Amino acid sequence: MGWSKLKLDEVTVRRTELLKLRRQGVRYDDERVEALGYSSPDAARKDLHRALEAHRNAEAAEVSIYRQQENERLDALLEAAWPQATQPTPIRDKEGNIVGEELDMRAVDTVLRLMDRRAKLNGLDMPAKAEITGANGGPLQMSQASTTELEAIMNAGPAPDHEDASDEQPGNGSG
Image: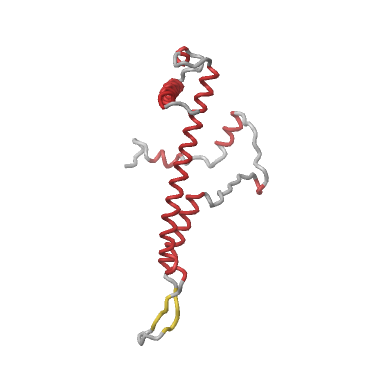
């Protein structure tokens, strides 16, 4: 048999207070956590994990509902744009004779954007793979550098042009 509404409300209040304490950095073995009615620090830890999991499940359900609604909207828009994007329309000359056919490229663009939105919404696109390589495409060599080595690397570039800076200083006859 399930818990009564009163019991569920008590658990919700206790979990909310526990969450507030944990966000403040209060440890599970603190007397304030024990004052909430937990029999042990481990019981408080387990209860908080259950609360977070329940929240995660509720959030996932809401996201699923939202995704379904958005997919239905995309279906309706795609259904409206599809015929114009896929069925060529006749091109007529001045006399009204058919001289060719063409697709409505604005409708094609609309369909492609709808399909792109659907792919993003449903996570259909493969993530871009990025790889950092070393010299000549080989493995990247990693090691710790000493301060002397780091200074040598930083100083390896071209020397700053100090002549330009000296021309701008007061008292050198310029300006």
